[in-house]
Image 1: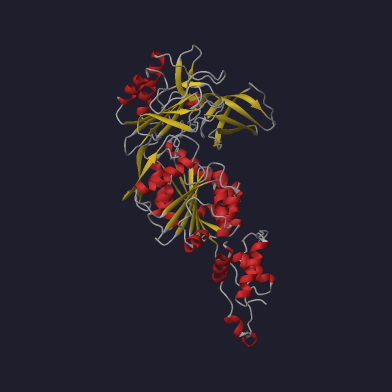
Image 2 (image 1 turned 135 degrees about the horizontal axis):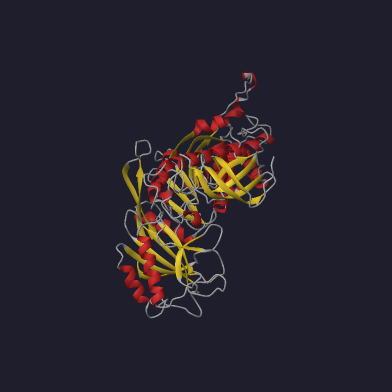
Length: 594
């Protein structure tokens, strides 16, 4: 194999594409990763970093374009790096994302190609893969000549590319940004400097309700909300000429909310914790429609939900595809109106309220307190009374309920029957951040044993990791489907339906009826009777597995390896000592043991 060095020029045919959208080709067995190259291209590239068996190279010239190559509509796409796939035709982008999900399930999840191909459904693409984002966050700074600019950071840097017209954002964004920059220039309002920590305006956050048409502008400033520089609710932020900014922005049709966010920390985190509204409403409204995912074109069903969105709210950035994503999750949940559902990482209740219209009771968990306040208000706004929301980490709240340590908030009206249904839900829906589900959360889900789990993922790598855990714990994948929420980028959402595995094996046993003690069978209690007795006397829940382990200890277990996971080396968790004692007391009560 020939060794290549930095600055060497090579001509190579691009044969594949990496997970971050980079083209992959080989020269003399030496692998090259080339940003902005497209499979099928023949390119000339300059090696920038060389390793023993591979190198990273910069695209210098496309010698022969690929049939999959498209003309990028944005002139900044190579500098920006936010749209890694913009030079690829949209149809091929969808193929790439389908393949990305599949490869992660094979490589990380350890599932067989035949199994994945059987379970995967075609990816759901977009009708219009531009101007789809309802939210954008623009850093504000200065160029080398000291001119005020806003745009996006160049890839892997904090250098701002001056661009007020990102083609993924709402068309109104450009006018909003131009008016803010004009105001800052005229009134000598400074931009934040990361190096010195000085300057006022850090970012501009813009949100749009695609159905409502309402616009929100939130300006992030380098100031603390208390102490020196404190402002009142009706006070000023930019000085006495603040009204000029408000007047300029409110001339834009749809403007509904103008606010400031305080962030004086030396951090890469964009938003601080406190927001003050300086004009209009503190929130905007938007509508998400339920779609029929079995019909061509995914038409509206006639059902919809209205959501209140604040600057700090988590809300999916692509409203059209979100309707398809959540409608697909609703379809996978298979609700009939009798089910109890947990929705983990619920945000402002978007999925929860979708589910509540079709379920008996829904419980949502989210770590951001403001999001939960929004979720409760969204439930009230939509006339939904069968959804309750709890503040906390999913990996802490769910185990706390399961172990009987019920948090006070939101649980005051729960009867014993409701508590039991919470501990034995029919469906658990999870929509975690990119890092996936916490181990404690997955473990508790396995202990609760819901018949169905619907996993909504924004990262197919952590999805594959978590699916392996769930399948080793007794679940089987039924359906997998990608949804393209982020056209022109490498990111893709995935929805997976899992169900409890059905027994694969049968054990033949010979029963001598003469040896059965009829009196003992009459006094045997069912698992549910034992669970109810323990709940009533001790105030906590025990699982079927806990009971089976204690019965096995006393030699009264009916089945060996109760609920054993499919994986041969999988181990079930031991039963805690306090639960052993409680179950033994129940068994004595029912005269099952002396």
